[in-house]
Length: 308
Image (cartoon, rainbow, N blue to C red; front, side, top):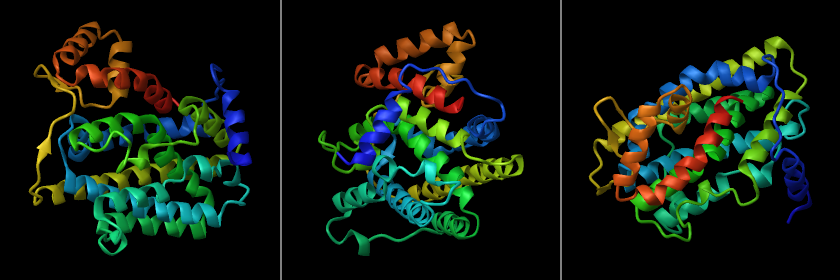
């Protein structure tokens, strides 16, 4: 194991079982509050809702991986360019977090050895990529917003999304095509997120800069929403088998494909009836027993991320 990687995991392990004492002025708190509304909107795009239900077209999933590849390649190029910048260096975790090489292996699995000549950057993804390069060169501290938006979300929800995609697309249990979701260098996602949050809060940022970082994080979510909407439009012209491995609809008032944070907060606010509906629906569904443990394990992690 790389010495830097080992050190970061040792540092992260110190946060196991630790309760953070946070201030409303901490960057992590400001980001959570400032992005809550747009985050919920992003999770209610049709593409995301279909994904969580397990309604996944293989060709569309591949295009989604292409968009992620271009996004992470741009972000990680700018992170490398600014890895010694004093306002980003504490968040430099290439071994633990960087995703573009894993995405390249996923694309090779789906498209074959010549995958690089088979893919194209879509217009919505290009706008996202251009913005990342712009801030990386002009205002690197704003990279914090994009890293927060992408990496913390991946660590929070990646394992559930991996299981849904693996089952719906009948991908190998050994993980081919889904390496993007595997953070092999992170021993504990919860502890690592606490470490990352602590590092963010220790950045020497004045109030105006914190405001700018939060505003950039909102933009990052909106860029993601544009990509999701673009994928949804592409999906309308794709003819492919659609397999259902998602969670079932419950009653007439909504569905269980909503973000696990929604389920957690509903139950926490006294939604006993809702919790019972969740349990009954899961137990009735053919794949419920397989996915149940993953959903329950993820609720705490996602809720914690939202309250960062």
